[in-house]
Image (cartoon, rainbow, N blue to C red; front, top):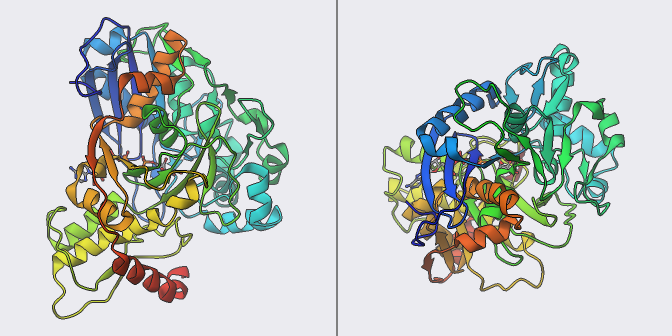
Length: 487
Ligand SMILES: Nc1ncnc2c1ncn2[C@@H]1O[C@H](COP(=O)(O)OP(=O)(O)O)[C@@H](O)[C@H]1O
Ligand SMILES: O=C(CO)[C@@H](O)[C@H](O)COP(=O)(O)O
């Protein structure tokens, strides 16, 4: 079992990297010297359906414990651990550190009205982009906190600490309320332009949503530890005293795991679809398409995110009664798979749309159209996340659960016209967290650790001619259907 596709195992210390994302927790035990994955575990999460998307944070802790148990004795020997987690989720804790209510997740769009109001109150989209580098989407933590205050004031009043998903797990490990700049940059109340690696909380913005800064975690600067694993964590197979990294958001962790350099675009196909690149310049997109996130090292991570990716396409396959790979070419069907509303483009009230059916349209063509719709939304932001001087021939790094599927790979090739590289290492978020943990032991930059491990080695797929006709059909349908999708 190797992350790196072949280097021999060494005698390096062991580290644990955790990916606590929407659907599950994955844990890897990695040899810090070679990057060899010596054990792995995975346990699922429950996410509510209906109007919102919520998960009980206590369940993430149970899933972490279970995933580590599956790693066996190797986890107990690890010298350091770090947690990458789904971004943005609002975790509210009471005075005893227990969740006041389930966490509202990144893909819960109930706070769209609060988002619109907040954008207007600060002086519009441009003002937000200039101030925090992003125009908040309803994904951002600040909009969820505003929703909570309005809709469940007693829960907001009982809140003694506000955390992100990865902060919650890190705090249970160390007993200290901490976060990092990468995940903090998705809250809506963190600013990174003052030159200090940890950035700062924007007290004026916090005042607008009546959130006391004392309720927020300390931002641990890159290269520093959050603490050590506490004693007395019954049933958790980690060694007390093991170093705990600051952790980060899952996309920032994957960027670490790839040892990503500026100019290399990443397309991640999971519950969310994301497209991003590392940049030395702080982004500020007033259209709101690109979020100006910080990375976990001191650079930036301009990123666009869709709400409808693998789950939406799998749902189309299920509705059509087909295997997810049973796509067929041709036809004129167009699917805008916005089953959960959408963030890119910004259409929180949208639902899915199927257009262009003819008597001879086949179910396999409709399924292919669903893949096309999901990938189109991401590719429309590809050039926007890259710096102007980025090489347009650089391959797209394709990661996330969907990257294992042939239909996903071929759709990205056909709609992008670019070479595609699918890393052999499948769990890049957990590997990035492991690289952060390893860097704390060795004093190295975590991205250098990942490069040393060779995590971006994989299958190279040559470019194919871009399917302009499909792109044009999608663009036209999106334009024409806008009033309907705005709901
Ligand atoms: N072999 C495969 N082919 C295509 N899709 C896959 C394959 N394996 C997993 N997936 C997709 O990957 C998704 C999970 O991706 P993952 O990146 O682990 O999600 P997340 O991190 O958002 O929880 C599932 O929704 C599933 O549709
Ligand atoms: O909201 C975003 C990025 O801004 C999402 O990418 C979340 O971070 C969830 O990630 P996955 O669970 O799909 O990996």
